[in-house]
Image (cartoon, rainbow, N blue to C red):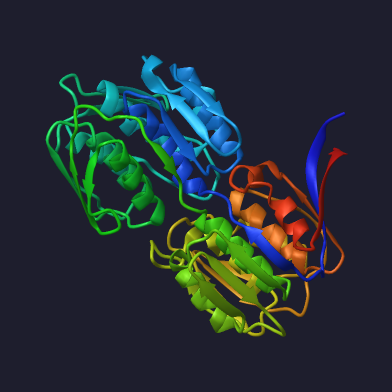
Length: 423
């Protein structure tokens, strides 16, 4: 008999207390591959204990690295790596496997990377990644779903011009450029916090990167990089998810170990809805009493409203007074969770990239299924608000990017548990 692990949430409970945010998922999946660029062991601290980190650890081991991970700190010894072919089965499990393109080209001048997997949230082409590698002298072709890249003379510094702002492309360009010969200038670069954190990590290994956090990044290539011990920044998206959960439950929650300046676009929207948001150096307190007001949201590249928080935020908007308009400008298939929430009584219409959400007085618990990582978080938010029990399937998506989310919510007063059920 087949079984599936599900999450069961009894809604209507107010979240109260203090919760510590974990290390950044989006930072971790860039920094872990980057450890292969150096010639000595590295230690990466404050990593989240999530599925994507475990998959990357397996990928590094498959390439020949020695890796130890204790659930928070990872020690990587890259000296035994002699393979430039990323493992097929593991690459298909996550989007961030594409970062091995820049890493392996930077280290070996060769790379063979299966087209990456990850959540199904719409097309996420790697054409800009490939454009960046070609600008640095690589020859690249795709055959049967595998990217074959080579730079027999090594990667050369060059000018990289992105047609659109791309976080993944910016990261891959930095990874390749930091060991290329000469100088590289990356134009129209992404400004996200994890782009800056990756640059800081690479610089801690002896790279020469300037301008991260602006739209022009300059990299002076280095022949060798040395080992480093580095702690990743807190998770911006987990911070936002917990902030939204606090508001959704009309609770009073203080999130510690976060970076409030990374959350300004979300904080502004929660304030507009009527919640109270108080910030100090490394903590945010979110309180909410009474009904929320409808708001309009458009996802944008940083510092705009993050696409990764669109799904949890739309869950909150399903019970806000009035009509909310949400425009998804980054990924066109990021509304699948709304159709699941319709089972719970949400009043929503989706027209191309715009979701029209008519606030309803209450949601009702129902069986629903997560279609991707952030959709799973959105369904958890909906379950916290709903009357009765919400049963969420496909919780493995949630495990990809949130460290023990149900434990953190339970510690704040949520009634939430996991169980294996027969299908």
